[in-house]
Length: 438
Image 1 (cartoon, one colour):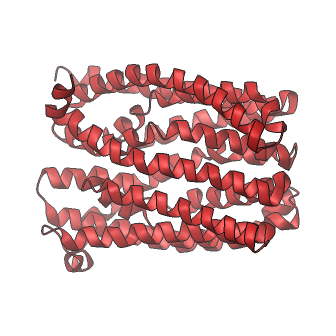
Image 2 (cartoon, helix red, strand yellow):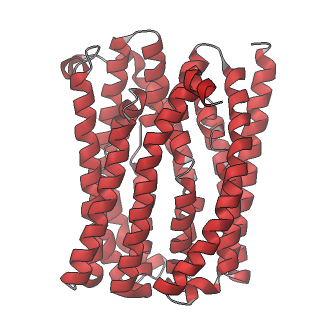
Image 3 (cartoon, helix red, strand yellow):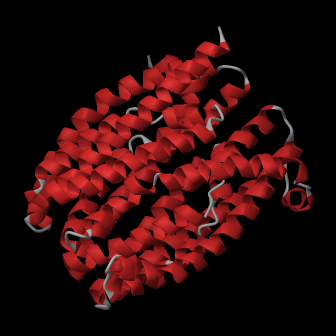
């Protein structure tokens, strides 16, 4: 009942944070879709495909080089909060900031230096390379891993949601002004995306500093002056493995666009629009992923791993029942929307959109399995399983896209989902059995 949920210590906090996160994610999704439509209408399908290829390249470099420490901060920081060890919490925050700033600078430099070489290998036109030079600067501003971790750990989800909406709104306004009113074309779109993302990151960092200043248990001075020698190695190792896991997840997250670019930039545009619709579906569960990791981390610290797994199964069953009907409805609504706003090519591949959304629904029903795996400190296995699944995706995507086109990417993606979910599920169940009764 509603009263049971309100008084339940796990679900009441989870649903409150999910609601706040959902506002940010759904708002960002709507703004992202409007930005896509505005960009396609003003610069055309081919130019939008070029924009997405350049943007995907920069995101890949950002993921590979720019480590994000938020999962480590939540895991180590959550334990420090549970033990009321605020000196340790300050140490964790300091290490996270050092990692964030250093890898943001390194990522920007790598993105610049490799752009021309990668462009020649993949036979990109000059516009893609120019776009990469513009967009690479947003990596420099993406030093937000610790900011995100502190905001989530301290239940300040509203700040992250605001940053998502702010970045999306600025990107949309930038595209309208640069591409529509100023007629700056593709160059204007590059600048609009850069400004929107960068200012969203800066807002997030400012809010992180604000949270630290207002909290009486820790201080900026304490963070700056504390020694981190005793925890540096352990924290960096954890962050390294979680970042490497994100890196090996690149094929299914970004390489689909690069693989499809071998067909045409128009097909890239179609698939990116479908992915944005799928991301709108993901917005229903991203708040769960954001909100549940801090709670799982605290429960694991209290020795309540089996209770976490019970909650995971409950969430999976309820989520799947909700997502399947929504996926069917979104397919129908999207096709009607395409008819009035975009070209017929977006309707031509309707079956790809349907299968994509159904596959996403299956994967998203298991959203909470990933934060539970991290909370149980299975970071190396998380890396190995993600690497295996993504290598399978890459092989199947390359082979199938050549044979059946855009549908091949969706089939390869579904194979990746099945592999990684059931590998993690089997590992968690084995760990719980070996742990004995709760």
